[in-house]
Image (cartoon, rainbow, N blue to C red; front, side):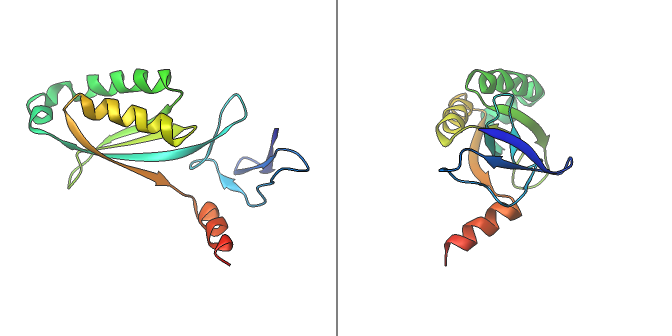
Length: 137
C-alpha cells in the first residue's frame, strides 16, 4: 500500500494494489488522517453532556481530558481536539480512530467514569459523501 499526494499539501490518494480499490477522489487532510503506518483513519466527533457528578467536578475537567488522551493512545485512537462549548453540549471531542470498535471502547470508558453522557458521530468529508451518493445509483 502506498500513499501519495494527489495535490500538493491539500489531499491524498490511496492505492492498495491493481486488484484492490483506488480512492479516486481527494481526501481533505483535516477529515481523514494519515498515520505513520500509512493507514487512513476516520474522524469521530463525540458530544458530551455533563452529568450532575461532572458538574460537581467541573474544575477537574481538563485533567480528565489528559486522562482521556492517554486512554485513547492505548487504544490506537488519536485525540485531535477537545472543545468546551456553550449550548446543549458541554464538551466536543474529536478523535481519529482506525475502526468503530476502537472508538466504541474509548467512548464506553469515558461514559463509565460517570462525568458525561456521550453521543458519537462518524464524520464524512464532502468527497466521502459524494462517494456514498455515487453508490446509490
